[in-house]
Image (cartoon, rainbow, N blue to C red; front, side):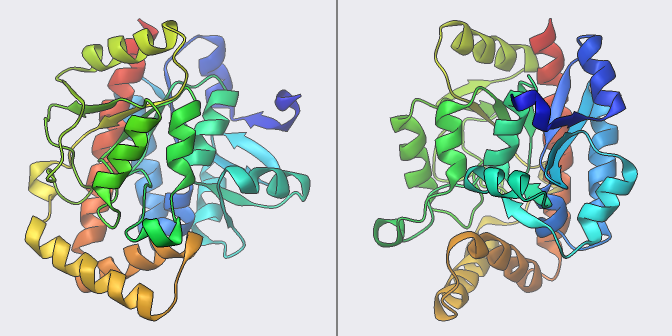
Length: 303
């Protein structure tokens, strides 16, 4: 029974009873995506943004083998400071739960746990995807397969710009995952508002996004929906600048034989170093913006 493994915070339990909109949040961004103390500060601020927009935040993590849906302040602090937190994707969940370990959930694992808990909307930074050179390495994020099969809408700033965005879109198309552009025709690329690629469909309001998401599931079409929401203009980085930085970071990863689940944390750390911290500021801004839009969509879905 899945229910045996789930533990809800009092706030989330109350929201479920009252049928309030809930927005899931991942925890990898806290444990592996940002330095302390910005990671914990951002997590708390993002939760507050969700509350202000009429929904209830549910940050998800594995603690002592329990799937926690909603975290206390102390648990957020623990995730942000402990070195004993593993990165948890779909394949890692049974190991971490069976061995009563701690895990910070990726996009894929957060989607799974959100679906267990009946949460329909998840706000994150950017989704994983097809890595550059995947035609030889086969390095494709489990996030994409999860989007193909798990009924959770993911609000993000597009695909991380360290990826092969064109191949990521091809993969999503093959698996029938619609990519909606929130007030945009161009797919945002995490740090930048645009990329050379188009979204499948544009939506200009939370109501429009919610209608499309609800219709998809009512038609029996399983799988997620990507709601690509560009980083606010004031916080976006210049496209040529970030492209150059990413190329440098990718070359360094290759030289150091960094592969698999270590690639993304390495690249994000290197990008932060090469942009002198500008990428971290951008990352925080886009996560907050996604939380705001995600809350509005969750509220609309409840209507």
